[in-house]
Length: 327
Image (cartoon, rainbow, N blue to C red; front, side, top):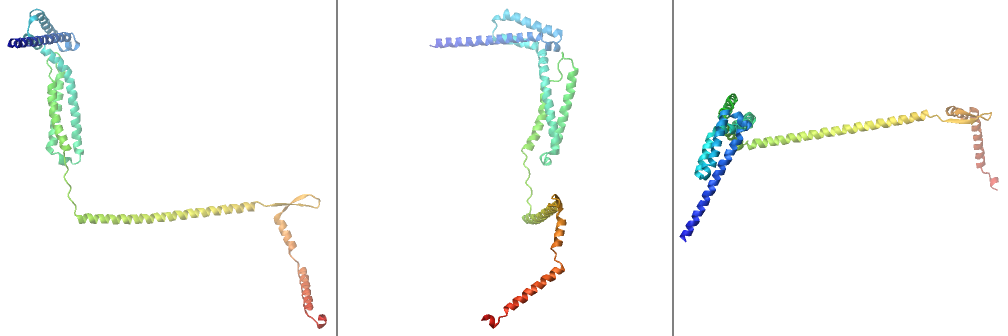
Protein backbone atom coordinates (compact mmCIF):
# COMPACT_ATOMS: atom_id res chain seq x y z
CA UNK A 1 0.00 0.00 0.00
CA UNK A 2 2.78 2.38 0.93
CA UNK A 3 4.69 1.52 -2.25
CA UNK A 4 1.66 2.29 -4.41
CA UNK A 5 1.07 5.67 -2.72
CA UNK A 6 4.74 6.55 -3.14
CA UNK A 7 4.59 5.56 -6.78
CA UNK A 8 1.56 7.76 -7.33
CA UNK A 9 3.26 10.69 -5.65
CA UNK A 10 6.37 10.22 -7.81
CA UNK A 11 4.28 10.18 -10.96
CA UNK A 12 2.47 13.35 -9.90
CA UNK A 13 5.73 15.17 -9.16
CA UNK A 14 7.14 14.14 -12.55
CA UNK A 15 4.04 15.49 -14.27
CA UNK A 16 4.40 18.78 -12.44
CA UNK A 17 8.08 19.07 -13.39
CA UNK A 18 7.27 18.28 -17.00
CA UNK A 19 4.53 20.91 -17.06
CA UNK A 20 6.84 23.53 -15.49
CA UNK A 21 9.63 22.74 -17.99
CA UNK A 22 7.27 23.06 -20.95
CA UNK A 23 5.95 26.36 -19.62
CA UNK A 24 9.51 27.74 -19.18
CA UNK A 25 10.43 26.60 -22.71
CA UNK A 26 7.33 28.31 -24.22
CA UNK A 27 8.12 31.57 -22.40
CA UNK A 28 11.71 31.52 -23.69
CA UNK A 29 10.64 30.81 -27.28
CA UNK A 30 7.89 33.51 -27.25
CA UNK A 31 10.29 36.15 -25.90
CA UNK A 32 12.92 35.30 -28.52
CA UNK A 33 10.28 35.56 -31.27
CA UNK A 34 9.08 38.93 -29.91
CA UNK A 35 12.61 40.42 -29.91
CA UNK A 36 13.24 39.15 -33.47
CA UNK A 37 10.09 40.95 -34.65
CA UNK A 38 11.09 44.20 -32.89
CA UNK A 39 14.54 44.30 -34.54
CA UNK A 40 12.94 45.01 -37.93
CA UNK A 41 10.40 47.49 -36.56
CA UNK A 42 10.68 51.24 -37.47
CA UNK A 43 10.50 52.39 -33.82
CA UNK A 44 13.23 49.91 -32.91
CA UNK A 45 15.49 51.26 -35.65
CA UNK A 46 14.97 54.88 -34.51
CA UNK A 47 15.86 54.07 -30.91
CA UNK A 48 18.88 51.82 -31.64
CA UNK A 49 22.13 51.91 -33.52
CA UNK A 50 23.22 49.35 -36.10
CA UNK A 51 25.75 47.88 -33.66
CA UNK A 52 23.04 47.40 -31.00
CA UNK A 53 20.75 45.67 -33.47
CA UNK A 54 23.55 43.33 -34.59
CA UNK A 55 24.41 42.48 -30.97
CA UNK A 56 20.80 41.70 -30.11
CA UNK A 57 20.33 39.65 -33.26
CA UNK A 58 23.45 37.64 -32.36
CA UNK A 59 22.11 36.96 -28.83
CA UNK A 60 18.78 35.68 -30.19
CA UNK A 61 20.38 33.45 -32.83
CA UNK A 62 22.79 31.95 -30.28
CA UNK A 63 19.91 31.23 -27.87
CA UNK A 64 17.82 29.55 -30.54
CA UNK A 65 20.77 27.32 -31.55
CA UNK A 66 21.31 26.38 -27.90
CA UNK A 67 17.62 25.59 -27.49
CA UNK A 68 17.67 23.17 -30.42
CA UNK A 69 20.91 21.45 -29.29
CA UNK A 70 21.91 21.53 -25.62
CA UNK A 71 18.72 23.02 -24.30
CA UNK A 72 16.50 20.39 -25.85
CA UNK A 73 16.58 18.30 -22.66
CA UNK A 74 17.09 21.28 -20.29
CA UNK A 75 14.95 21.47 -17.18
CA UNK A 76 12.89 24.36 -15.86
CA UNK A 77 15.76 25.91 -13.92
CA UNK A 78 18.14 26.05 -16.88
CA UNK A 79 15.50 27.46 -19.24
CA UNK A 80 14.60 30.25 -16.81
CA UNK A 81 18.30 31.13 -16.45
CA UNK A 82 18.67 31.35 -20.24
CA UNK A 83 15.62 33.65 -20.47
CA UNK A 84 17.11 35.94 -17.85
CA UNK A 85 20.40 36.19 -19.81
CA UNK A 86 18.62 37.15 -23.02
CA UNK A 87 16.49 39.79 -21.23
CA UNK A 88 19.61 41.36 -19.71
CA UNK A 89 21.25 41.53 -23.14
CA UNK A 90 18.33 43.42 -24.72
CA UNK A 91 17.16 45.31 -21.59
CA UNK A 92 18.58 48.72 -22.58
CA UNK A 93 16.89 48.73 -25.95
CA UNK A 94 13.59 47.37 -24.62
CA UNK A 95 13.65 50.06 -21.92
CA UNK A 96 13.99 52.78 -24.57
CA UNK A 97 11.07 51.28 -26.51
CA UNK A 98 8.79 51.15 -23.45
CA UNK A 99 9.69 54.71 -22.41
CA UNK A 100 9.05 55.95 -25.92
CA UNK A 101 5.42 54.71 -25.66
CA UNK A 102 4.78 55.48 -21.95
CA UNK A 103 6.32 58.98 -21.76
CA UNK A 104 3.67 60.83 -23.88
CA UNK A 105 0.87 59.32 -21.78
CA UNK A 106 2.56 60.40 -18.53
CA UNK A 107 3.12 63.94 -19.84
CA UNK A 108 -0.53 64.25 -20.91
CA UNK A 109 -1.67 63.16 -17.44
CA UNK A 110 0.67 65.71 -15.81
CA UNK A 111 -0.66 68.55 -18.00
CA UNK A 112 -4.20 67.64 -16.99
CA UNK A 113 -3.21 67.92 -13.32
CA UNK A 114 -1.70 71.34 -14.05
CA UNK A 115 -5.00 72.58 -15.54
CA UNK A 116 -7.07 71.32 -12.59
CA UNK A 117 -4.65 72.79 -10.03
CA UNK A 118 -4.57 76.15 -11.79
CA UNK A 119 -8.39 76.34 -11.89
CA UNK A 120 -8.60 75.44 -8.20
CA UNK A 121 -6.06 78.09 -7.17
CA UNK A 122 -8.04 80.74 -9.08
CA UNK A 123 -11.31 79.62 -7.48
CA UNK A 124 -10.02 79.92 -3.89
CA UNK A 125 -10.38 83.72 -3.90
CA UNK A 126 -13.96 83.51 -5.25
CA UNK A 127 -14.98 80.75 -2.84
CA UNK A 128 -17.35 81.80 -0.01
CA UNK A 129 -15.79 81.50 3.47
CA UNK A 130 -12.39 80.79 1.87
CA UNK A 131 -10.62 82.73 4.63
CA UNK A 132 -12.18 80.41 7.23
CA UNK A 133 -11.53 77.20 5.24
CA UNK A 134 -7.92 77.80 4.17
CA UNK A 135 -4.97 79.34 5.93
CA UNK A 136 -2.30 81.41 4.22
CA UNK A 137 0.08 78.43 4.47
CA UNK A 138 -2.37 76.21 2.55
CA UNK A 139 -2.52 78.64 -0.35
CA UNK A 140 1.26 79.18 -0.35
CA UNK A 141 1.99 75.42 -0.31
CA UNK A 142 -0.23 74.58 -3.29
CA UNK A 143 1.17 77.50 -5.29
CA UNK A 144 4.74 76.49 -4.44
CA UNK A 145 4.28 72.82 -5.39
CA UNK A 146 2.46 73.81 -8.57
CA UNK A 147 5.27 76.17 -9.64
CA UNK A 148 8.06 73.71 -8.77
CA UNK A 149 6.44 70.79 -10.59
CA UNK A 150 5.75 72.90 -13.66
CA UNK A 151 9.35 74.13 -13.74
CA UNK A 152 10.72 70.59 -13.29
CA UNK A 153 8.67 69.25 -16.19
CA UNK A 154 9.65 72.07 -18.53
CA UNK A 155 13.38 71.57 -17.77
CA UNK A 156 13.32 67.77 -18.10
CA UNK A 157 11.14 67.85 -21.19
CA UNK A 158 13.58 70.24 -22.85
CA UNK A 159 16.52 67.96 -21.99
CA UNK A 160 14.70 64.92 -23.38
CA UNK A 161 14.04 66.68 -26.68
CA UNK A 162 17.71 67.63 -26.91
CA UNK A 163 19.06 64.11 -26.24
CA UNK A 164 19.56 61.57 -29.00
CA UNK A 165 16.81 58.94 -29.29
CA UNK A 166 19.37 56.12 -29.39
CA UNK A 167 20.68 57.08 -25.95
CA UNK A 168 19.15 56.44 -22.56
CA UNK A 169 16.11 58.74 -21.99
CA UNK A 170 16.38 61.63 -19.51
CA UNK A 171 12.68 62.20 -18.82
CA UNK A 172 11.30 58.95 -17.40
CA UNK A 173 7.61 58.08 -17.03
CA UNK A 174 8.06 56.92 -13.41
CA UNK A 175 9.60 60.30 -12.46
CA UNK A 176 6.69 62.13 -14.07
CA UNK A 177 4.25 59.96 -12.10
CA UNK A 178 5.99 60.68 -8.78
CA UNK A 179 6.01 64.46 -9.38
CA UNK A 180 2.35 64.37 -10.35
CA UNK A 181 1.53 62.42 -7.18
CA UNK A 182 2.92 65.24 -5.01
CA UNK A 183 0.76 67.85 -6.73
CA UNK A 184 -2.36 65.67 -6.71
CA UNK A 185 -1.92 64.83 -3.04
CA UNK A 186 -1.77 68.52 -2.04
CA UNK A 187 -4.71 69.34 -4.29
CA UNK A 188 -6.89 66.57 -2.82
CA UNK A 189 -6.02 67.74 0.69
CA UNK A 190 -7.39 71.23 -0.04
CA UNK A 191 -10.47 69.89 -1.86
CA UNK A 192 -11.35 67.69 1.12
CA UNK A 193 -10.92 70.66 3.43
CA UNK A 194 -13.60 72.54 1.53
CA UNK A 195 -15.78 69.44 1.20
CA UNK A 196 -15.94 68.70 4.93
CA UNK A 197 -16.01 72.32 6.09
CA UNK A 198 -18.80 73.15 8.56
CA UNK A 199 -19.60 76.89 8.77
CA UNK A 200 -19.65 78.51 12.18
CA UNK A 201 -23.11 79.31 13.63
CA UNK A 202 -24.08 82.95 13.37
CA UNK A 203 -24.58 84.89 16.66
CA UNK A 204 -28.19 85.19 17.84
CA UNK A 205 -29.79 88.64 17.75
CA UNK A 206 -31.74 89.91 20.83
CA UNK A 207 -35.37 88.83 20.74
CA UNK A 208 -36.62 92.33 21.59
CA UNK A 209 -34.72 93.80 18.68
CA UNK A 210 -36.01 91.14 16.33
CA UNK A 211 -39.60 91.61 17.53
CA UNK A 212 -39.28 95.38 17.15
CA UNK A 213 -37.95 95.03 13.63
CA UNK A 214 -40.70 92.53 12.77
CA UNK A 215 -43.46 94.85 14.09
CA UNK A 216 -41.97 97.86 12.30
CA UNK A 217 -41.80 95.85 9.10
CA UNK A 218 -45.42 94.80 9.51
CA UNK A 219 -46.60 98.41 10.06
CA UNK A 220 -44.60 99.60 7.09
CA UNK A 221 -46.09 96.87 4.95
CA UNK A 222 -49.64 97.76 6.15
CA UNK A 223 -49.08 101.45 5.39
CA UNK A 224 -47.66 100.61 2.06
CA UNK A 225 -50.63 98.37 1.19
CA UNK A 226 -53.13 101.08 2.29
CA UNK A 227 -51.43 103.75 0.23
CA UNK A 228 -51.31 101.39 -2.73
CA UNK A 229 -55.05 100.61 -2.36
CA UNK A 230 -55.89 104.35 -2.17
CA UNK A 231 -53.82 105.07 -5.22
CA UNK A 232 -55.53 102.20 -7.00
CA UNK A 233 -59.01 103.54 -6.14
CA UNK A 234 -58.07 107.00 -7.35
CA UNK A 235 -56.77 105.60 -10.57
CA UNK A 236 -60.00 103.57 -11.05
CA UNK A 237 -62.15 106.69 -10.46
CA UNK A 238 -60.13 108.72 -12.90
CA UNK A 239 -60.38 105.96 -15.48
CA UNK A 240 -64.18 105.72 -15.02
CA UNK A 241 -64.50 109.53 -15.33
CA UNK A 242 -62.44 109.54 -18.50
CA UNK A 243 -64.55 106.72 -19.99
CA UNK A 244 -67.80 108.58 -19.09
CA UNK A 245 -66.51 111.82 -20.66
CA UNK A 246 -65.55 109.94 -23.78
CA UNK A 247 -69.01 108.35 -23.99
CA UNK A 248 -70.70 111.77 -23.61
CA UNK A 249 -68.55 113.35 -26.29
CA UNK A 250 -69.37 110.43 -28.60
CA UNK A 251 -73.15 110.91 -27.96
CA UNK A 252 -72.91 114.67 -28.62
CA UNK A 253 -71.06 114.06 -31.85
CA UNK A 254 -73.69 111.54 -32.98
CA UNK A 255 -76.61 113.92 -32.16
CA UNK A 256 -74.90 116.75 -34.03
CA UNK A 257 -74.39 114.52 -37.03
CA UNK A 258 -78.09 113.53 -37.00
CA UNK A 259 -79.23 117.18 -36.82
CA UNK A 260 -76.91 118.12 -39.65
CA UNK A 261 -78.26 115.25 -41.73
CA UNK A 262 -81.87 116.40 -41.05
CA UNK A 263 -81.13 119.99 -42.00
CA UNK A 264 -79.28 118.87 -45.10
CA UNK A 265 -82.28 116.76 -46.30
CA UNK A 266 -84.88 119.33 -47.56
CA UNK A 267 -88.14 117.75 -48.79
CA UNK A 268 -89.42 118.77 -52.21
CA UNK A 269 -93.20 119.02 -53.06
CA UNK A 270 -94.63 118.78 -56.59
CA UNK A 271 -97.83 120.77 -57.54
CA UNK A 272 -99.80 121.32 -60.74
CA UNK A 273 -99.54 124.76 -62.31
CA UNK A 274 -102.16 126.50 -64.45
CA UNK A 275 -100.92 124.77 -67.62
CA UNK A 276 -101.26 121.27 -66.04
CA UNK A 277 -97.54 120.65 -65.52
CA UNK A 278 -95.79 119.69 -62.27
CA UNK A 279 -93.45 122.18 -60.69
CA UNK A 280 -91.21 121.98 -57.58
CA UNK A 281 -92.38 124.02 -54.61
CA UNK A 282 -90.11 124.77 -51.67
CA UNK A 283 -91.60 123.70 -48.36
CA UNK A 284 -90.40 126.79 -46.53
CA UNK A 285 -91.90 129.22 -49.06
CA UNK A 286 -95.21 127.33 -48.99
CA UNK A 287 -95.36 127.46 -45.16
CA UNK A 288 -94.85 131.22 -45.30
CA UNK A 289 -97.74 131.62 -47.83
CA UNK A 290 -100.15 129.38 -45.90
CA UNK A 291 -99.25 131.21 -42.69
CA UNK A 292 -100.25 134.54 -44.30
CA UNK A 293 -103.55 133.12 -45.50
CA UNK A 294 -104.45 131.70 -42.12
CA UNK A 295 -103.90 135.01 -40.25
CA UNK A 296 -107.32 136.84 -39.81
CA UNK A 297 -107.71 140.56 -40.74
CA UNK A 298 -109.02 143.19 -38.40
CA UNK A 299 -112.30 143.46 -40.31
CA UNK A 300 -113.06 139.81 -40.07
CA UNK A 301 -112.24 139.89 -36.39
CA UNK A 302 -114.80 142.70 -35.70
CA UNK A 303 -117.49 140.93 -37.78
CA UNK A 304 -116.99 137.76 -35.89
CA UNK A 305 -117.23 139.58 -32.58
CA UNK A 306 -120.58 141.32 -33.54
CA UNK A 307 -122.14 138.02 -34.56
CA UNK A 308 -121.04 136.44 -31.30
CA UNK A 309 -122.65 139.30 -29.32
CA UNK A 310 -125.94 139.04 -31.25
CA UNK A 311 -126.19 135.39 -30.53
CA UNK A 312 -125.60 136.05 -26.84
CA UNK A 313 -128.52 138.69 -26.65
CA UNK A 314 -130.84 136.31 -28.38
CA UNK A 315 -130.11 133.59 -25.88
CA UNK A 316 -130.69 136.02 -23.01
CA UNK A 317 -134.09 137.03 -24.42
CA UNK A 318 -135.10 133.52 -24.77
CA UNK A 319 -134.15 132.87 -21.17
CA UNK A 320 -136.70 135.43 -19.87
CA UNK A 321 -140.15 133.64 -19.37
CA UNK A 322 -143.48 135.46 -19.36
CA UNK A 323 -146.73 134.14 -17.84
CA UNK A 324 -148.16 134.18 -21.33
CA UNK A 325 -145.59 131.89 -22.57
CA UNK A 326 -146.31 129.42 -19.81
CA UNK A 327 -150.04 129.42 -20.72
